[in-house]
Image (cartoon, rainbow, N blue to C red; front, side, top):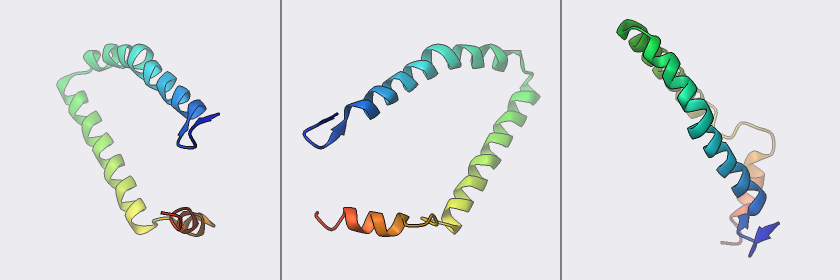
Length: 81
């Protein structure tokens, strides 16, 4: 189910439902928990998330496209452009 070979309807619907769930279900729950934290707890949470983000970015920079067959598939996809 794609539209003109460009847009996958199933992927678009799944992305939309995931966005709806994030905004309408998870964020109100997260805000309740976040507001109960002290300022020190909020700062600690922000630092932990920043460290996790930096570690992920460093890992991805050191090991780009390390999966088996990823580079060969990507190269083949762009030959027609």
